[in-house]
Length: 101
Image (cartoon, rainbow, N blue to C red):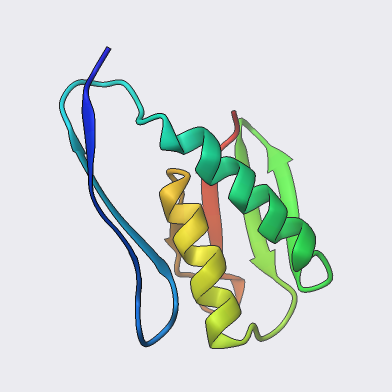
């Protein structure tokens, strides 16, 4: 098991995105990954009318249904990143992707 140390847990003063800095060694994921997935799931439910979430091919894709307010986008982006996902820039088809499971 790998030891992880949370060095920073704060919020961006400009966009209010959550910022966490976790350091460790090895291939294990930090225990906070489970918490991050739970927070992401809660946010996806909260913004369900503004997001299109699909599971296929072992991954989850999250597309916006139109323009998202900058604060909402930053919240979702921070949670997706914390859960191990990333933003894929493809113009009007830009979306988030993360591993399923």
